[in-house]
Length: 367
Ligand SMILES: [Zn+2]
Image (tube, rainbow, N blue to C red; front, side, top):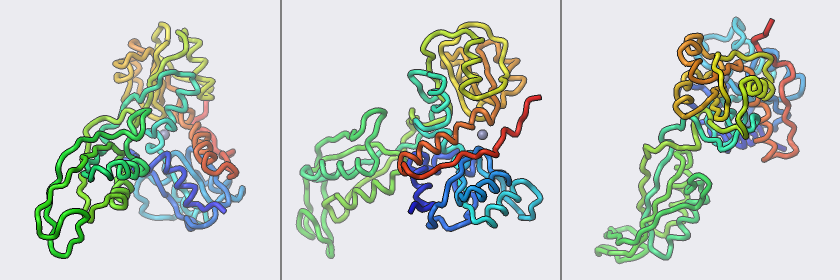
C-alpha cells in the first residue's frame, strides 16, 4: 500500500516546496481526502480543470499532481462561478487531493523543467541561467578531536556537505574550547565548577537551508557533549545548481531553420514565434514558462538563441536582432512536467502507476 503522503514525500525529496518563489502558491491545494489514505492512483497534468478532476475520478485516482497551482489567489467563496471554484468543489466531492509543484520544480537542480527541455534538445554542459541567491547555510561546530569523524559523518548523512559533484565536504581546524560546567550539569569532560580547556576540532560544513532541522538533529544525536556548541550562518553565495532556466551548447553549429525545427519537435509545438535574427546557433539559453525577463541575461551569457514563452512584442523589437528569440508557447514549454513527475515517482515506487492526463489540451489553439 502506498499512501498519498508517501507519493508527495517522494516528489518533495527532489522538489522541496520551500524552494518555490515567494509569490507562488505551490504545495497542497485541496485535501479532498486524507494524506494518510492509500493512493488509489495518480494523475499528472499542467493545469487542474473540472475536466481533469472528472478524468481523475473516472480513472480511479485520488491524487492529482499538477504543475500550475489550482489556487493562486485567495478564494472568497465556493459557488462554482469560476473554473477554479468548480475544480476545487469537484475535487472535494470526489475525494481527490490536489498538489502542485510549479516554481519549486522550475528551479529544482537537475530535474527542473528547463533541464528536461535542455536534455531533449541535446544541449551539453548545462548550467543554470539565473542562479538563486543564498539558499545555503554554513554549519560551524566544535567537537573533541576523537569525535570529529563521527559527528561529520552524521551531519553528512543528514544532507550537508555537497558542493557540485563532490559530497562529504568539510573544513577542519584544531583549536581549544573552554567552558565551566555549572551545578546540575553532567559534563562529558572536565569537572563541575572548574574551568576546563579541551582540544577540539572546528568543523565547517555547507548545507541547503531546508536540511537545517535534520542537520541540527544529527549534531545533537552524535555530539558527545551535553550542550553541543554549533552555529548556522546564512550565506550570500549563489547556489549554482538552483535557479530558473539553463544555458548549454548544441553538439554542433546549427542554422536557424534546422534549430527552429529541432525546438518544435522537442517542445511538440505546432508553431513558434521567432525574431528575425540570422546566424548560426551554437550556444542556447532557455527558460520554461514565462521567461521574457531573462532575454538580456541570456544574451550577456553568450546565447545565440533564447527559448521561452509569453515574450512581449516590444522584447522582439528591442532584442530580436541581438539573438534568436523563440517563443514556443507556455503550455508547450511545461507539458514535460508529466514525464518529470512520472520519472521522480517511478524511481521510488517502480510498480506504482502514474497516469498522464488524456483530456488536458493546450488552452491556446492555432487556427
Ligand atoms: Zn507556467
